[in-house]
Image 1 (cartoon, rainbow, N blue to C red):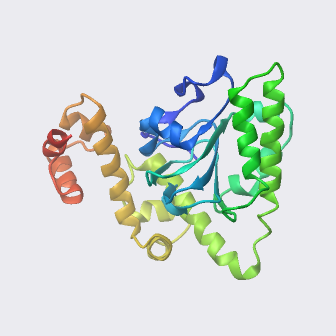
Image 2: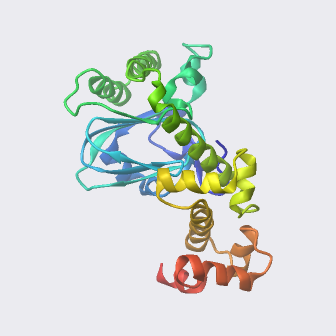
Amino acid sequence: MKATGLPVLALASFPNTPSGAPYYCERLETHVVRFPHVNAAHAHDFYLLLYVTAGTGTHTVDLVAYDLRPGSVFFLAPGQVHHWQLTPDTRGFVVFFSADFYLFRYPGAGLYAYPFFGSAHPPVLYLPAAETEIQPLFQRLLDEYTAPHANQADVFRSYLHLVLELATRHYPASPAAEAEASLALQQIRQFGALLNEHYRTRRSVRDYADLLHLTANHLNALCRRVLNKTASALIHERVITEARRLLSHSALSVAQVGYELGFEDSSYFVRYFRKYAGTTPEAFRQQR
């Protein structure tokens, strides 16, 4: 999934990674304090695993919000846009790794065939809070990462492989009764991918419906059923999210921000922002 505009973080963005290693592991509660920017919407150029052991919240991946609770395991592929809202008592583990790191030992299409990294299945697995199959492996990954040995990479990779293989067992083929729901989720995630790629130049529901080979009415109905929002509302939210990011974290003028977002007329951008954000760009910037 190509994420345009939002930050795309690399492993090098996390300086705790030893010697530029193509993998990373940390306690979730430590990670979000050390790197507070990860709480805002962003993407990565690496794979991410998240295991929650305590606390609650939501984790939004490609427009879809999922419950975050003890026993939930999230799997994100490079390029997926996500952000989370965590309660202060949230605890868990976060793991990053590059495709090359995994494929060095386990070559072939296996990494790309895991169900949780594809659009046909949800990117979250809900396990019992007290399960003892996968959680101990995350602890092993953390122990290996924080107490490096000469063969650390090989052992870390082996534990990672076990996590992915055992998680796959919890993803049986979808029964026929769930086929329609799976298709709807897949289409929503595809819409999210297209929206991240084209929001600067395409702002009509018909544009995205055509790209998805759907009618505009069908796409709107799909978004209402799955997300309780219209497709047009999601398009406007994406534009406003990027506008807020640029107004908050850049020195661009309001007119320049509008131009970056495809608005040739700065006064139209101001009206658009006021309509969908409830305030003017300047007023929003002064509130920051």
